[in-house]
Amino acid sequence: MRNLDYTPLYRSIVGFDRLANMMDSASKTDPSTGFPPYNIEQLGENDYRIELAVAGFGEDDLTVEVQENVLTVSGRKEQKSESENPNYLYRGIAERAFERRFHLADHVVVENAELKNGLLAVTLRREIPESAKPRRISIGNATAKSRKVIEGGKSKAA
Image (cartoon, rainbow, N blue to C red; front, side, top):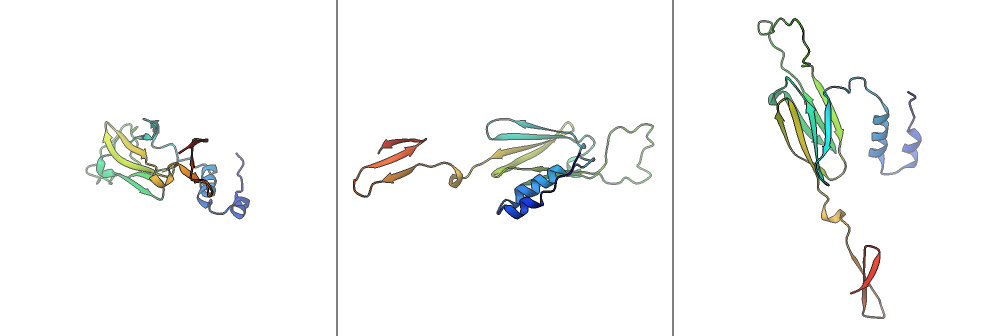
């Protein structure tokens, strides 16, 4: 795959540094991004769930953090002493350390995380603040006392 240089974008856009950084990081492929496997499910219009298959990890081995619209899920198993370490004939359950990052859209918050049957489920909700929701603006006439309210592209007399 050919690598693209996004440097010209940085010179021509102002205030979209986060978007340019996301495009730059998305274009870079990391061969270790396959573990752990995950699903992203939309539960409703504003509700989502991310499920990660973390077999072999307990609640104390997992960390879920959110910082600057980036959800980071990491897992690290404690090293067992040689006396506790079993003699495996075949080892198919991966217990290696991992870190998986998810870039969240604006106004998406993490509600909770729970571990059940080897699946870590992280529940997300989009909460749009009142200041970002659409609002009606009344238009007044300086000479007449009637006002028009614009609602959904149609004007109505108030």
